[in-house]
Amino acid sequence: MKHTRLLVFCASFLTVSGLAQAGEIQAYAGAVAGFAEGGTGPFGCATSGPTIPAPWSAGISLPTEGFVSCHLAGGIDNQVATSGTLNASQSVSGPSVGGTFSGSAQARAGYWNLGVAVDGSNSGGSAPSVFRQTAAFARFVVPVTLNSPGIATGTTGFVNFSFLVEGNMFSDRNAPYSQQVDTYLGLRVNNTTIGPWTAFAATIVDEGLPFVRGGSSGLPGSFVLGPGSLTGSANVTSTGNFAMRWGVPFQVEVALYAQQSSCCYGTTLSADFLNSAVLNGIQAYGPAGLVNDFTGFDDEGNLLGASGVLSAVPEPASLLLISLGLSAVGVFARRQPRCR
Image (tube, rainbow, N blue to C red):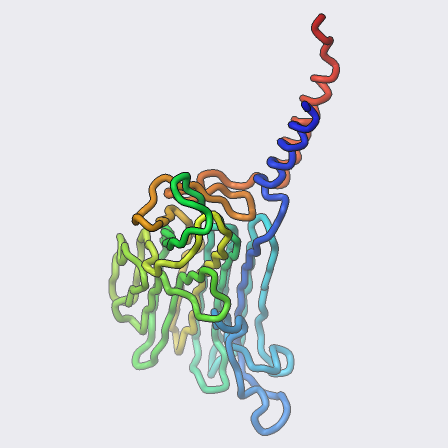
């Protein structure tokens, strides 16, 4: 009986600790600069598109022939894993019209915790064939299950997620040229075809006032908006009312991304949200409305509740120490003299 209980405990521990991996995290940083020329045919290197496909349609825009064939500087650092925290970075310096474009991108991805940052400056001019862009993209996808003692498994409900988003954006342009920098937080729940729900978006065009919006409550939060600048934070709660069933796993996918393309003759753009977005709340609803008494977990072993992540899965090093500790306890127990 004691051995049976021990096996049950170990199986439960391994499940909660997240050793049974099911989710995915992604950190992407891209940068490109230079004159696109080469390729094949009369329209060689003239067709480009985002390097992260739909439904996100994010990342730098790149000719279909790629960096080398089109004589472009830069690169893409795209990392994908099932556990831990990923950090991606990329920088570039390349020619523009009579000058140089330089920029960098950073991305950090973990479950329920994402960050991105981009910057760029151009001392020269622009033309249709000149590339001058940096982009960062951080994403996670994971199955989640919510339970409540008063709600039967399979009961239909809906859920919204709250994220703390904090950072700053800046645009310094040389009139009359135009430029733009964007930051987005998007969510998808149980949906692999329709585009993401934009929970938060901020855009600065030229040196105008930032445009902050999104399908969430809590905007603009404490963000301070000025000519060509934005700084502060907001606790954004999605208003998508994403459908789910209680006690049944549903897939949650969240991405934070930023992109900029500084224009001409001394212009600079930046967006730094490397310390966000962080989950800090879940609103779950049942047939009678908002449910306060619920618990949840994801397939990575994170325990979830109304305030967000209640406890996170231990890192591999911590798991090793726990395993060694359990082994030591077992050895110690076997060496104890039996009571007479």
